[in-house]
Length: 205
View 1 (cartoon, rainbow, N blue to C red):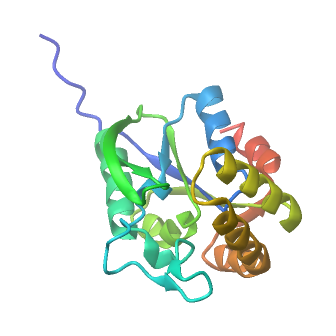
View 2: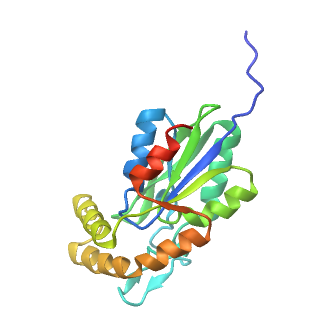
């Protein structure tokens, strides 16, 4: 019997942050197809709808899904650490339409893979990943605000994420707040880029 390779998986995390609808998931999928890199959807670490720690939006009269406290940062970083240390980790599967986790799946990484971690709160994990020695690079994916609004609304309507009126109201608030969101991500250490720019800069890796 061949002895198992004792060399640990050397995981390095590429953070794809940015406003909702900016193209993070599409970029992650292109990198997965082109390079075989695993993708961790950090939005799957949202808190469940009945979690008492979930913040509320006074303007929308509902849970504030755009507040950083609406996701489990510690759980997300711990899962990324397990993936980078062992080459495999269990991740939740979150259903946005029902506001709860509906299952889990396993993500695997090869020894030389970069791990793509994408989500609207991904920038919040940059410093923790840096302290753990796992951060490769961090990107704030962005377009013009009007284009992001259109892309986000089309996606959310297609996926029936919430009632249409809620999606429009939320989209207008997100468009108003987008400069603040981008500034926050840059402050946390992300580099601003369009999806195409980030893809080209990661291609030689």
